Image 1 (cartoon, rainbow, N blue to C red):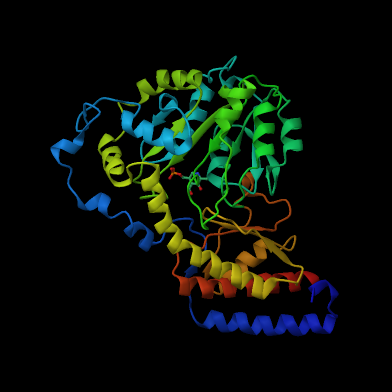
Image 2: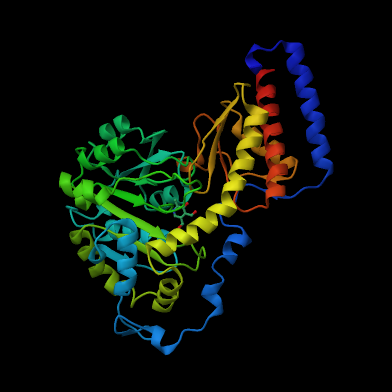
Length: 422
Ligand SMILES: Cc1ncc(COP(=O)(O)O)c(C=O)c1O
Protein backbone atom coordinates (compact mmCIF):
# COMPACT_ATOMS: atom_id res chain seq x y z
CA UNK A 1 0.00 0.00 0.00
CA UNK A 2 1.17 3.52 -0.77
CA UNK A 3 2.44 5.37 2.28
CA UNK A 4 0.28 8.35 1.33
CA UNK A 5 -2.84 6.18 1.76
CA UNK A 6 -1.90 4.73 5.17
CA UNK A 7 -3.37 5.93 8.46
CA UNK A 8 -1.15 7.88 10.84
CA UNK A 9 -1.07 5.04 13.37
CA UNK A 10 0.10 2.63 10.67
CA UNK A 11 2.79 5.05 9.53
CA UNK A 12 4.04 5.46 13.10
CA UNK A 13 4.18 1.71 13.58
CA UNK A 14 6.08 1.27 10.30
CA UNK A 15 8.50 4.05 11.22
CA UNK A 16 9.23 2.56 14.64
CA UNK A 17 9.92 -0.90 13.27
CA UNK A 18 12.23 0.54 10.60
CA UNK A 19 14.05 2.56 13.24
CA UNK A 20 14.64 -0.62 15.21
CA UNK A 21 15.92 -2.37 12.10
CA UNK A 22 18.33 0.46 11.36
CA UNK A 23 19.58 0.42 14.97
CA UNK A 24 20.26 -3.28 14.59
CA UNK A 25 22.31 -2.65 11.42
CA UNK A 26 24.26 0.09 13.24
CA UNK A 27 25.45 -2.35 15.89
CA UNK A 28 26.97 -4.54 13.17
CA UNK A 29 29.66 -1.92 12.40
CA UNK A 30 29.35 -2.49 8.65
CA UNK A 31 31.50 -0.74 6.04
CA UNK A 32 29.71 -1.05 2.70
CA UNK A 33 30.01 1.16 -0.35
CA UNK A 34 27.60 1.84 -3.20
CA UNK A 35 29.37 5.02 -4.32
CA UNK A 36 32.24 3.73 -6.42
CA UNK A 37 31.51 3.45 -10.13
CA UNK A 38 34.43 1.22 -10.84
CA UNK A 39 35.05 -2.44 -11.68
CA UNK A 40 35.55 -5.00 -8.91
CA UNK A 41 38.78 -6.98 -8.68
CA UNK A 42 37.32 -9.99 -10.52
CA UNK A 43 36.71 -7.72 -13.52
CA UNK A 44 40.27 -6.41 -13.39
CA UNK A 45 41.44 -10.03 -13.37
CA UNK A 46 39.93 -10.40 -16.86
CA UNK A 47 42.75 -8.20 -18.20
CA UNK A 48 45.71 -9.46 -16.19
CA UNK A 49 47.20 -10.84 -19.39
CA UNK A 50 48.03 -7.21 -20.27
CA UNK A 51 50.53 -7.24 -17.42
CA UNK A 52 51.92 -10.72 -17.57
CA UNK A 53 53.49 -10.94 -20.97
CA UNK A 54 56.61 -9.11 -22.19
CA UNK A 55 56.47 -7.73 -25.74
CA UNK A 56 58.61 -9.52 -28.32
CA UNK A 57 60.57 -7.45 -30.83
CA UNK A 58 58.19 -8.51 -33.58
CA UNK A 59 55.36 -7.05 -31.51
CA UNK A 60 56.66 -3.65 -30.50
CA UNK A 61 57.33 -2.63 -34.07
CA UNK A 62 53.82 -1.84 -35.34
CA UNK A 63 52.75 -0.18 -38.58
CA UNK A 64 56.45 0.40 -39.20
CA UNK A 65 56.87 2.34 -35.93
CA UNK A 66 59.20 1.26 -33.15
CA UNK A 67 56.81 1.87 -30.28
CA UNK A 68 59.70 2.14 -27.80
CA UNK A 69 60.57 5.48 -29.35
CA UNK A 70 59.02 8.91 -29.96
CA UNK A 71 56.73 9.33 -32.92
CA UNK A 72 53.21 8.83 -34.15
CA UNK A 73 51.65 11.43 -31.84
CA UNK A 74 48.01 10.81 -32.90
CA UNK A 75 48.20 7.14 -32.07
CA UNK A 76 49.34 4.05 -33.96
CA UNK A 77 47.42 3.70 -37.25
CA UNK A 78 46.24 0.28 -36.03
CA UNK A 79 44.92 1.77 -32.79
CA UNK A 80 43.15 4.59 -34.64
CA UNK A 81 41.61 1.93 -36.90
CA UNK A 82 40.64 -0.14 -33.86
CA UNK A 83 38.64 2.75 -32.38
CA UNK A 84 37.28 3.75 -35.78
CA UNK A 85 35.93 0.24 -36.41
CA UNK A 86 34.54 -0.07 -32.89
CA UNK A 87 32.62 3.22 -33.04
CA UNK A 88 31.95 3.52 -36.78
CA UNK A 89 34.17 6.56 -37.41
CA UNK A 90 36.86 6.97 -40.13
CA UNK A 91 40.28 6.26 -38.59
CA UNK A 92 41.69 9.59 -39.87
CA UNK A 93 39.14 11.35 -37.65
CA UNK A 94 40.38 9.57 -34.52
CA UNK A 95 43.11 10.78 -32.17
CA UNK A 96 44.33 8.23 -29.62
CA UNK A 97 45.06 9.71 -26.22
CA UNK A 98 46.61 8.58 -22.98
CA UNK A 99 45.14 6.76 -20.03
CA UNK A 100 42.05 8.98 -19.57
CA UNK A 101 39.32 10.27 -21.88
CA UNK A 102 38.42 12.80 -19.20
CA UNK A 103 41.82 14.42 -19.77
CA UNK A 104 41.00 14.70 -23.51
CA UNK A 105 37.67 16.31 -22.61
CA UNK A 106 39.38 18.80 -20.30
CA UNK A 107 41.91 19.52 -23.06
CA UNK A 108 39.15 20.11 -25.60
CA UNK A 109 37.32 22.61 -23.41
CA UNK A 110 40.66 24.27 -22.57
CA UNK A 111 41.46 24.62 -26.30
CA UNK A 112 38.04 26.15 -26.84
CA UNK A 113 38.77 28.60 -24.03
CA UNK A 114 42.24 29.60 -25.22
CA UNK A 115 42.06 29.29 -29.02
CA UNK A 116 38.48 28.42 -29.95
CA UNK A 117 37.44 25.34 -31.96
CA UNK A 118 37.09 25.04 -35.77
CA UNK A 119 33.99 27.25 -36.07
CA UNK A 120 34.72 29.67 -33.20
CA UNK A 121 34.58 33.36 -34.06
CA UNK A 122 36.68 33.96 -30.88
CA UNK A 123 38.03 31.94 -27.95
CA UNK A 124 35.34 31.02 -25.42
CA UNK A 125 37.23 32.86 -22.69
CA UNK A 126 36.30 36.15 -24.42
CA UNK A 127 32.59 35.45 -23.89
CA UNK A 128 32.07 36.85 -20.41
CA UNK A 129 28.64 35.33 -19.77
CA UNK A 130 29.39 31.94 -21.36
CA UNK A 131 27.04 29.08 -20.54
CA UNK A 132 27.03 25.29 -20.88
CA UNK A 133 24.09 22.86 -20.96
CA UNK A 134 24.21 20.05 -18.42
CA UNK A 135 21.62 17.29 -18.75
CA UNK A 136 20.92 16.24 -15.16
CA UNK A 137 21.13 13.89 -13.44
CA UNK A 138 24.54 13.58 -15.08
CA UNK A 139 28.24 13.05 -14.44
CA UNK A 140 29.73 15.33 -11.78
CA UNK A 141 33.21 15.37 -13.34
CA UNK A 142 31.79 16.76 -16.59
CA UNK A 143 30.06 19.54 -14.72
CA UNK A 144 33.25 20.26 -12.76
CA UNK A 145 35.28 20.86 -15.95
CA UNK A 146 32.93 23.50 -17.36
CA UNK A 147 32.43 25.05 -13.92
CA UNK A 148 36.19 25.38 -13.52
CA UNK A 149 36.41 27.10 -16.94
CA UNK A 150 33.92 29.74 -15.84
CA UNK A 151 30.80 28.59 -17.69
CA UNK A 152 27.45 29.08 -16.05
CA UNK A 153 26.01 25.57 -15.84
CA UNK A 154 22.43 25.30 -17.09
CA UNK A 155 20.63 22.10 -16.03
CA UNK A 156 18.45 20.33 -18.59
CA UNK A 157 15.97 17.62 -17.57
CA UNK A 158 16.63 14.04 -18.61
CA UNK A 159 13.83 11.98 -20.17
CA UNK A 160 13.83 8.24 -20.98
CA UNK A 161 15.01 9.21 -24.51
CA UNK A 162 17.84 11.54 -23.51
CA UNK A 163 17.96 15.22 -22.62
CA UNK A 164 14.65 17.11 -22.90
CA UNK A 165 15.10 18.36 -26.45
CA UNK A 166 12.39 21.03 -26.20
CA UNK A 167 14.52 22.65 -23.48
CA UNK A 168 17.79 22.08 -25.36
CA UNK A 169 16.49 23.56 -28.64
CA UNK A 170 15.27 26.67 -26.87
CA UNK A 171 18.41 27.20 -24.76
CA UNK A 172 20.80 26.52 -27.68
CA UNK A 173 19.46 29.57 -29.54
CA UNK A 174 21.30 31.81 -27.05
CA UNK A 175 24.69 32.65 -28.64
CA UNK A 176 26.36 32.62 -25.21
CA UNK A 177 25.45 28.93 -24.81
CA UNK A 178 28.58 27.29 -26.20
CA UNK A 179 27.81 23.62 -25.83
CA UNK A 180 26.52 20.70 -23.86
CA UNK A 181 27.59 17.47 -22.14
CA UNK A 182 26.14 14.17 -23.38
CA UNK A 183 26.68 10.58 -22.28
CA UNK A 184 24.61 9.12 -25.11
CA UNK A 185 24.74 5.43 -24.24
CA UNK A 186 23.98 3.90 -20.84
CA UNK A 187 24.27 7.41 -19.39
CA UNK A 188 25.91 8.07 -16.05
CA UNK A 189 23.80 7.75 -13.89
CA UNK A 190 20.42 7.08 -15.55
CA UNK A 191 21.58 4.23 -17.80
CA UNK A 192 19.40 5.48 -20.65
CA UNK A 193 20.48 5.53 -24.31
CA UNK A 194 19.56 8.47 -26.53
CA UNK A 195 16.82 7.65 -29.04
CA UNK A 196 17.12 8.13 -32.77
CA UNK A 197 14.76 11.14 -32.52
CA UNK A 198 16.94 12.78 -29.83
CA UNK A 199 20.11 12.26 -31.90
CA UNK A 200 18.47 13.72 -34.99
CA UNK A 201 17.21 16.76 -33.08
CA UNK A 202 20.74 17.30 -31.73
CA UNK A 203 22.22 17.21 -35.22
CA UNK A 204 19.47 19.28 -36.85
CA UNK A 205 18.77 21.97 -34.25
CA UNK A 206 19.59 25.62 -34.80
CA UNK A 207 22.17 27.06 -32.44
CA UNK A 208 22.86 30.70 -31.61
CA UNK A 209 26.60 30.05 -31.34
CA UNK A 210 28.25 28.91 -34.62
CA UNK A 211 30.68 26.85 -32.50
CA UNK A 212 28.10 25.16 -30.25
CA UNK A 213 29.89 21.96 -29.23
CA UNK A 214 28.39 18.67 -28.10
CA UNK A 215 30.81 16.74 -25.89
CA UNK A 216 29.68 13.24 -26.90
CA UNK A 217 31.16 11.08 -24.15
CA UNK A 218 30.55 7.53 -25.33
CA UNK A 219 32.24 6.03 -22.25
CA UNK A 220 29.84 3.05 -22.14
CA UNK A 221 29.64 2.31 -25.87
CA UNK A 222 30.10 -1.47 -25.51
CA UNK A 223 29.06 -2.02 -21.89
CA UNK A 224 25.91 -4.15 -22.21
CA UNK A 225 24.41 -5.92 -19.19
CA UNK A 226 22.05 -8.12 -21.19
CA UNK A 227 22.00 -9.97 -24.50
CA UNK A 228 19.84 -7.42 -26.27
CA UNK A 229 21.69 -4.20 -25.53
CA UNK A 230 20.68 -0.71 -26.63
CA UNK A 231 21.63 0.59 -30.09
CA UNK A 232 22.92 4.15 -30.35
CA UNK A 233 22.67 5.88 -33.74
CA UNK A 234 26.00 6.91 -35.31
CA UNK A 235 26.06 10.62 -34.52
CA UNK A 236 28.68 11.48 -37.13
CA UNK A 237 26.60 9.86 -39.91
CA UNK A 238 23.57 11.92 -38.85
CA UNK A 239 25.64 15.09 -38.42
CA UNK A 240 27.22 14.67 -41.87
CA UNK A 241 23.72 14.45 -43.38
CA UNK A 242 22.66 17.56 -41.47
CA UNK A 243 25.84 19.50 -42.29
CA UNK A 244 26.70 19.89 -38.58
CA UNK A 245 29.69 17.55 -38.28
CA UNK A 246 31.78 20.22 -36.54
CA UNK A 247 29.26 20.28 -33.68
CA UNK A 248 30.22 16.88 -32.22
CA UNK A 249 33.37 15.72 -30.47
CA UNK A 250 33.28 12.11 -29.39
CA UNK A 251 35.26 10.50 -26.54
CA UNK A 252 35.73 6.99 -25.23
CA UNK A 253 38.31 4.79 -23.52
CA UNK A 254 39.09 1.25 -22.48
CA UNK A 255 38.86 2.26 -18.81
CA UNK A 256 36.00 -0.17 -18.17
CA UNK A 257 37.08 -2.67 -20.82
CA UNK A 258 40.57 -3.29 -19.39
CA UNK A 259 42.04 -1.14 -16.58
CA UNK A 260 40.58 2.18 -15.35
CA UNK A 261 43.42 4.68 -15.19
CA UNK A 262 45.71 2.46 -17.26
CA UNK A 263 43.80 1.99 -20.51
CA UNK A 264 43.75 3.77 -23.86
CA UNK A 265 41.52 6.77 -24.59
CA UNK A 266 40.34 8.33 -27.84
CA UNK A 267 38.63 11.33 -29.27
CA UNK A 268 37.02 11.74 -32.70
CA UNK A 269 35.69 14.76 -34.52
CA UNK A 270 35.16 16.29 -37.94
CA UNK A 271 38.25 16.69 -40.14
CA UNK A 272 38.22 20.45 -39.41
CA UNK A 273 38.09 19.97 -35.64
CA UNK A 274 40.73 17.22 -35.76
CA UNK A 275 43.06 19.55 -37.72
CA UNK A 276 42.47 22.36 -35.23
CA UNK A 277 43.08 20.00 -32.29
CA UNK A 278 46.30 18.60 -33.79
CA UNK A 279 47.78 22.08 -34.20
CA UNK A 280 47.49 22.70 -30.46
CA UNK A 281 48.11 19.16 -29.23
CA UNK A 282 51.33 18.99 -31.25
CA UNK A 283 52.69 21.62 -28.88
CA UNK A 284 51.16 20.02 -25.80
CA UNK A 285 52.51 16.48 -26.17
CA UNK A 286 55.16 14.52 -27.99
CA UNK A 287 52.72 11.62 -28.11
CA UNK A 288 51.01 9.21 -25.76
CA UNK A 289 52.03 5.76 -24.55
CA UNK A 290 52.30 3.61 -27.69
CA UNK A 291 53.50 0.56 -25.77
CA UNK A 292 50.18 0.49 -23.94
CA UNK A 293 48.45 0.81 -27.30
CA UNK A 294 50.38 -2.23 -28.56
CA UNK A 295 49.51 -4.26 -25.47
CA UNK A 296 45.84 -3.36 -25.92
CA UNK A 297 45.92 -4.22 -29.62
CA UNK A 298 47.41 -7.63 -28.89
CA UNK A 299 44.95 -8.27 -26.07
CA UNK A 300 41.71 -6.95 -27.60
CA UNK A 301 42.63 -7.16 -31.33
CA UNK A 302 39.42 -5.88 -32.92
CA UNK A 303 35.69 -5.27 -32.28
CA UNK A 304 35.09 -9.03 -32.02
CA UNK A 305 37.78 -9.23 -29.31
CA UNK A 306 36.16 -6.36 -27.43
CA UNK A 307 32.82 -8.14 -27.69
CA UNK A 308 34.33 -11.28 -26.13
CA UNK A 309 35.90 -9.26 -23.31
CA UNK A 310 32.67 -7.39 -22.64
CA UNK A 311 30.73 -10.67 -22.48
CA UNK A 312 33.04 -11.69 -19.60
CA UNK A 313 32.37 -8.38 -17.81
CA UNK A 314 28.66 -8.84 -18.40
CA UNK A 315 28.71 -12.29 -16.80
CA UNK A 316 30.16 -10.76 -13.62
CA UNK A 317 28.06 -7.59 -13.58
CA UNK A 318 24.60 -8.71 -14.61
CA UNK A 319 24.06 -10.62 -11.36
CA UNK A 320 24.90 -7.51 -9.32
CA UNK A 321 22.39 -5.39 -11.19
CA UNK A 322 19.80 -8.15 -10.79
CA UNK A 323 20.39 -8.38 -7.03
CA UNK A 324 20.03 -4.61 -6.63
CA UNK A 325 16.90 -4.50 -8.79
CA UNK A 326 15.32 -7.37 -6.82
CA UNK A 327 15.95 -5.68 -3.48
CA UNK A 328 14.62 -2.33 -4.65
CA UNK A 329 11.48 -3.81 -6.12
CA UNK A 330 10.75 -6.21 -3.23
CA UNK A 331 11.16 -3.47 -0.62
CA UNK A 332 9.91 -0.36 -2.40
CA UNK A 333 7.42 -1.34 -5.12
CA UNK A 334 3.93 0.02 -4.50
CA UNK A 335 4.86 2.38 -1.64
CA UNK A 336 4.79 5.45 -3.90
CA UNK A 337 8.05 6.79 -2.48
CA UNK A 338 10.72 5.82 -5.01
CA UNK A 339 11.41 5.04 -8.65
CA UNK A 340 14.58 3.83 -10.27
CA UNK A 341 16.07 3.06 -13.67
CA UNK A 342 16.44 -0.41 -15.21
CA UNK A 343 19.58 -0.02 -17.30
CA UNK A 344 20.51 -2.49 -20.01
CA UNK A 345 24.13 -1.46 -19.65
CA UNK A 346 26.63 0.86 -18.03
CA UNK A 347 27.63 1.14 -14.40
CA UNK A 348 24.78 2.80 -12.51
CA UNK A 349 21.20 2.76 -11.33
CA UNK A 350 19.60 6.14 -10.75
CA UNK A 351 17.23 6.20 -7.79
CA UNK A 352 14.70 8.96 -7.19
CA UNK A 353 13.33 9.01 -3.65
CA UNK A 354 10.56 11.26 -2.27
CA UNK A 355 11.20 14.97 -2.87
CA UNK A 356 13.34 16.49 -0.14
CA UNK A 357 14.60 13.10 1.09
CA UNK A 358 17.85 12.26 -0.79
CA UNK A 359 20.17 13.97 1.71
CA UNK A 360 18.38 12.30 4.60
CA UNK A 361 18.62 8.87 2.92
CA UNK A 362 22.35 9.45 2.44
CA UNK A 363 22.70 10.33 6.12
CA UNK A 364 20.65 7.39 7.43
CA UNK A 365 22.52 4.91 5.20
CA UNK A 366 25.85 6.34 6.34
CA UNK A 367 24.91 5.92 10.01
CA UNK A 368 24.22 2.24 9.30
CA UNK A 369 27.53 1.75 7.47
CA UNK A 370 26.58 2.24 3.79
CA UNK A 371 28.34 4.96 1.79
CA UNK A 372 26.34 6.43 -1.08
CA UNK A 373 27.45 9.04 -3.64
CA UNK A 374 26.60 12.43 -2.08
CA UNK A 375 23.04 13.56 -2.67
CA UNK A 376 23.13 16.34 -5.26
CA UNK A 377 26.36 15.13 -6.91
CA UNK A 378 24.48 14.30 -10.12
CA UNK A 379 23.42 17.95 -10.61
CA UNK A 380 25.38 21.07 -11.61
CA UNK A 381 26.94 22.76 -8.56
CA UNK A 382 25.88 19.71 -6.49
CA UNK A 383 22.38 21.18 -6.22
CA UNK A 384 19.50 18.82 -6.85
CA UNK A 385 16.50 21.17 -6.93
CA UNK A 386 14.17 18.42 -5.65
CA UNK A 387 16.73 16.74 -3.36
CA UNK A 388 15.59 13.35 -4.59
CA UNK A 389 18.27 11.75 -6.80
CA UNK A 390 20.83 9.17 -5.68
CA UNK A 391 23.36 7.44 -7.93
CA UNK A 392 23.80 3.76 -7.05
CA UNK A 393 26.95 1.96 -8.16
CA UNK A 394 26.59 -1.80 -7.62
CA UNK A 395 29.72 -2.93 -9.49
CA UNK A 396 32.49 -2.60 -6.97
CA UNK A 397 31.25 -4.64 -4.00
CA UNK A 398 30.79 -8.39 -3.73
CA UNK A 399 27.33 -9.81 -4.33
CA UNK A 400 26.93 -10.56 -0.60
CA UNK A 401 27.94 -7.04 0.41
CA UNK A 402 25.65 -5.61 -2.24
CA UNK A 403 22.69 -7.60 -0.86
CA UNK A 404 23.30 -6.20 2.61
CA UNK A 405 23.96 -2.63 1.40
CA UNK A 406 20.79 -2.64 -0.72
CA UNK A 407 18.71 -3.85 2.24
CA UNK A 408 20.02 -1.02 4.40
CA UNK A 409 19.46 1.46 1.59
CA UNK A 410 15.80 0.54 1.22
CA UNK A 411 15.27 0.85 4.99
CA UNK A 412 16.80 4.35 4.79
CA UNK A 413 14.58 5.26 1.81
CA UNK A 414 11.43 4.17 3.65
CA UNK A 415 12.42 5.79 6.92
CA UNK A 416 13.24 9.13 5.29
CA UNK A 417 9.90 9.12 3.46
CA UNK A 418 8.04 8.35 6.70
CA UNK A 419 9.84 11.11 8.59
CA UNK A 420 8.79 13.53 5.87
CA UNK A 421 5.17 12.34 5.86
CA UNK A 422 4.87 12.48 9.64
C1 LIG B 1 30.56 9.15 -18.38
C2 LIG B 1 31.99 8.95 -18.01
N1 LIG B 1 32.95 9.49 -18.76
C3 LIG B 1 34.25 9.34 -18.48
C4 LIG B 1 34.65 8.62 -17.39
C5 LIG B 1 36.12 8.49 -17.11
O1 LIG B 1 36.75 8.03 -18.24
P1 LIG B 1 38.33 7.84 -18.33
O2 LIG B 1 38.72 6.82 -17.35
O3 LIG B 1 38.56 7.45 -19.74
O4 LIG B 1 38.94 9.19 -18.02
C6 LIG B 1 33.69 8.03 -16.56
C7 LIG B 1 34.11 7.27 -15.38
O5 LIG B 1 33.36 6.91 -14.53
C8 LIG B 1 32.32 8.20 -16.88
O6 LIG B 1 31.36 7.67 -16.14
